[in-house]
Length: 301
Ligand SMILES: [Zn+2]
Image (cartoon, rainbow, N blue to C red):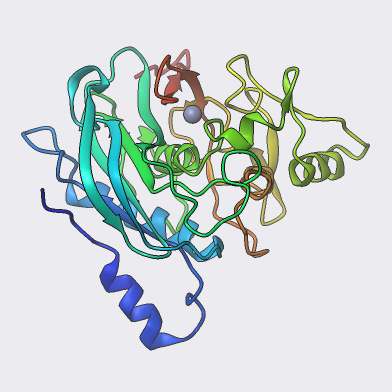
């Protein structure tokens, strides 16, 4: 099995440029299983690299290199999320490996993502499993039948039609990072709300009054649908609710970042990337989460 390491070039550039990204996490995408006529386009891969760089620049954990006797994850390009197992895989320090592919996800599901399983390693973090999360990576699948908008420059905003690939990639990477999937997420779910300190503080400040928890959707792995927070001071729908509308960009909001901090990530305080809205279903089994399109009366998809 060959493994693409698309971000190695970026990491090298970072070293040359400044110490700015010296502590960043590198998210490397592996497309080994994304074969056939339905594979992701180079434009889609470019958007993924952009999203990975955005996350990586704000996550400042130091993760040990680890060799895993077993990695397992769902086949991102296979029908029905068939399982894949790889043995004796080494994940480099400060790196997450994410297997990505395109598949027919069915219904209105536009994306599917979650952390991988297999051998557990702490990667040098303490409290993994209860208060922290240190995955080797995971897998993300994008629906091949969705009418995608693939932005050739995510730094600019323009009107578009289609479901925003950038927004869905951001959402699914959130699940890989443990949002709605990690043990340290579920240890902070109480009733139908998330009670992590950073998220509750952010939510309380945004609501203008003390809140006991941040409301979650039914599966307890997404924010309540339509919840809003801020990106750069602008209120918008959170990235990690479960639906996305047609023609809508959803960035990772302050509340989404706060949850990652509560899960155990060290998040640099820079204000994050922007996005749109999303809604998803939790699938049984592997902790996979699907994101579905929200039908709009005029357009559907
Ligand atoms: Zn989701």
